[in-house]
Picture 1: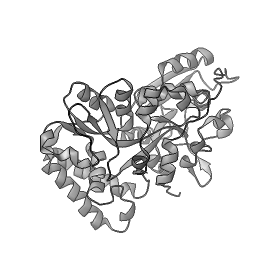
Picture 2: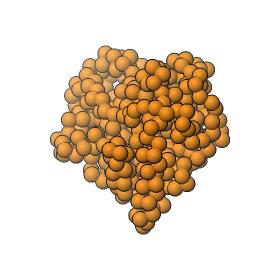
Picture 3: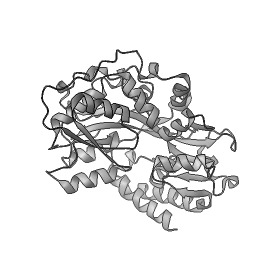
Picture 4: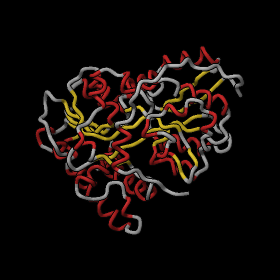
Length: 366
């Protein structure tokens, strides 16, 4: 199996995707269904309740959502369940796709079963980001990036991640350790995604240790290490923090709701990611899973609802035209900042995960 990467150019296309108004067809009742249930493991607020209600009414298929906040938890659960999974659809980020595939956890996507497959935005047509050796393994869903979020009432405009380490913000910052370690490595001029470290584990370990020691040195700046987007949102709302490393979704949601938050991509750069819906290998309700995937593609209004709830940019065509001006502004970036985003790669993921996880534990323990 080949690893695959996404270039900065394709990152820009992904984050700018979603133009052109489409008709909004009704969800089509399936002629046959393997069962009347579909089990989906996904993130909070990724699937709008209004869509679930309409889908269940139109198809008679019950949607059961199991929430997750971590790719590793999804992977471990599927691995433990083996050939008898309890989930039909999982939500995987592009750079973790090869890990799931190498463990035979996902089935190839039969796009011929999706009548609405052509309603993906132009940058995702044919899902090249999720295609390996001519086989497609997922439905593109939402795209985002890691940015620097700040409360504009208490912080100055900046062009550097260095603002997170200034003494005036002691106890007023927050981040996900494993994510921010990669960004700090980039901030220090190293390869935070480990793509160039395949035959240089000693160099990788030195760069990792440098970032680890730097974060330990500046541990007094941190109010709390967080795990879920809802946590960092609440800290901003309570004014417990003024600065944070965030996924673009939670920050954009705050901006859409009118809070004084700004998200930017500092000059040192950052990383982007793509979420997809993936059918599990040996899914107990595969027919119902395909009915669900086809229905969620059926209109840009569904994609817009997903964007409003999650804050991430939709992979579905026509969504930008459904959003209002404030919502579009929350999702947009100046061109020079968008140029600084690079999608996470699947290359050398085992090395990266091992070194990052160990360093994160050492930071917590320090």
